[in-house]
Image 1 (cartoon, rainbow, N blue to C red):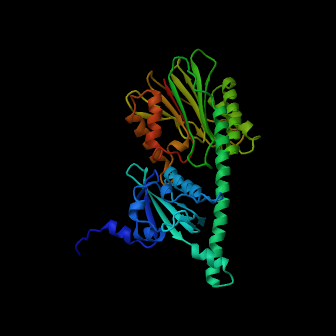
Image 2: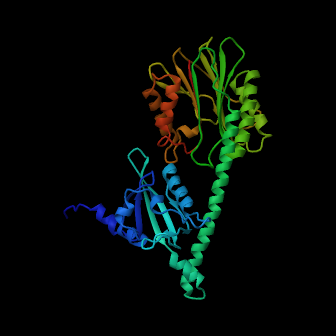
Image 3: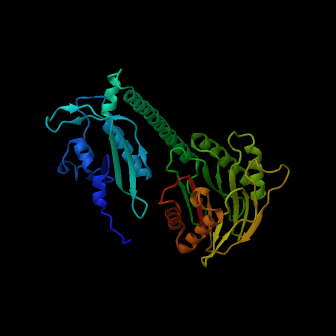
Length: 409
């Protein structure tokens, strides 16, 4: 059978139901025939114009919220790249025949993204179902029982949408508080002697998925020694940020007096037993000594740091890995290992948000990190940090919070 080219423009116009295409700036790129017919507008009155210039709120109704709700949904789709289904909305429409007269109308919209090759939203599909008659059937009760029940379902969906919106606002507020707390507790990237370091904390785009990761850099006793650590608290939100702050401070203090990274993590493990929410936290502590040109390290269930050699090869520090905090046998010393380094090598510590993917095993994730490090091996720490975030985060967006420390040795 010969291939037949599909006329997608004709398909779009023939779609059942009201469908419009919007740019990320909320300008109409196109609208199908049903959309124009049901809205009472011509193509010239819609295409190329800003959505809310075509369909503003009723200025005579101070309680009108349709425009605000629709704008919030569309902006969420642009920011997240994910579909957003809205429940019942009252959104009055100005009469074309009688300007200044507004018709009470009810709609059930669904907004979905069209992604470009780079993963960014290039268009929005705005599909709308008018449910005005269902609402009127409910108001005329008793009447058509089936129509009334359907109208009740739409009304309950609207109530659920309102609850979801309040939850979304509450989570957004919690995210702001947690990020402010995170910023206050994480140390500023102060210079470490003459050594060049870069640090990054990338919060997750999801309001529920932030603030469990930390990093720490501290000068240790000795002529030229520094301790570097990263960690990840299980859980998210404000409570995780509070636990993170306690554990980061405890590990920072322990590293100053402990005889090496393993002993510092042992002390942290003892402290974590008294902190609710600290169970199964992962962390890795390193000690860089320029006198001996060695890196001593120990890991509590954390992903292995990477050592980028001057020739572009990558070595993972995976020789001293133990279970996370609170998940290992008591009275058993944590393992500790040492690796030599050469001037010009680069040490990279990170949390799982940088590399892990749900559909990928850890070896593949570490392989992507190694490839990115080799690709940018000649970059200074600050540029390397930016390059890793751009290359490894999904379309530059973090689905889990990410901490990253890069030190030029």
